[in-house]
Image (tube, rainbow, N blue to C red; front, side):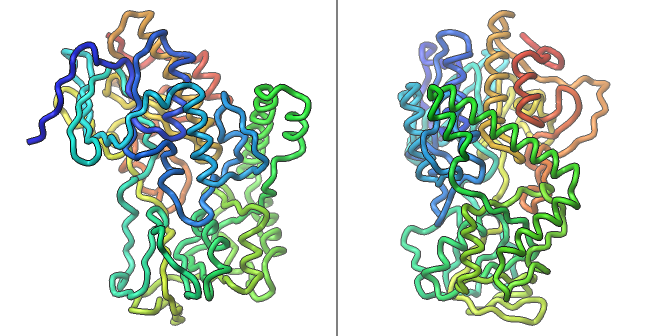
Length: 490
């Protein structure tokens, strides 16, 4: 039986942030800037470094597909010239940002939270964690902010592929890319057609014998000029750094939203335009039909970006190709397709999506009862029905993640100030007994790996129980909207 270190009352935290990625560091800033004065907080991070997703993912070409001007923090200007930034640069930026606000001094690394238990008698959370994979550690906090992302950091998505275990070559999970993996001169097959596949292909094709992207269904791939636009360069040249960053951030946020809105309202027109642009960049031996003619409309799934057309250049080089088919089975050295064709492979890269997970797999208890988040509604997309003093931060699927983090973080700081004004020790979202809400998934995209959202995340409802939709409306609501209805203060 695990023995946890006793916590003295002097060690009780006001806020515990779990996760030191983009959302966790951002939450620490908002807590210091907009939260009640004098809040004692800590950040628990299971890994040995700041960065979250960007510290974990190490596959070739790993980058953020959101523009860096909206993905970077509103409070720490980005000074680089690239629009789509790679993972290592993002980790460096997050470390520098944490140091800038002093959040790095509050982080406890290699600390994995196993469970959190709320006591109504104490009005406190008891947090049980494991340090360095061995030592048990216990914390107590009045409030918890989950900045744990939306997927499983420890386990990949299950692959139901007949014969996969018989394959004799390398089987690679992009999420856990081996540092010593050697693909030189090998026939490599990337299974999947999402952002990971589109990123990896041009970054390995030159050194492999040949790289094939094997997709069950095609996706939209948009070429993005990988340099900040002239409007951003002009803002930097003539405005103070903070103001220039604000101008750039607003410009890209409005541009992104306008583009998204236009696409959603004119799907057929945009689909024809995107297919025409993809066809222009393809080599003669690869046709747009069936390889780049998605069955869905743009933004029903997230668009894939390729910086400066690197994906198309790899296809034109002859070192990479695309096959659109379904896998029938896999043998020792080949992939056998349902069309009857075979592909010989020395290595398989399984880029088929991520395994969804809420709260990093942390068990949540309220007065001894285990909470199943997927059975609950989400209050304003950041708190769980019937769970006191616990918030979660998720970003947007149709815009920069950080914009969603901003809206939720500001809302939570306003809520903490309201609790202090009311002299409340707890706040609990409650669905009215007479409410009759239809349960919707919180993520609206139709991507295959997001289809079981309802089985993992809190449900999307109506009114106060709607998830975030767009930065401008969500930030307005965070600043001035109703933060009393359907909340029980005690």
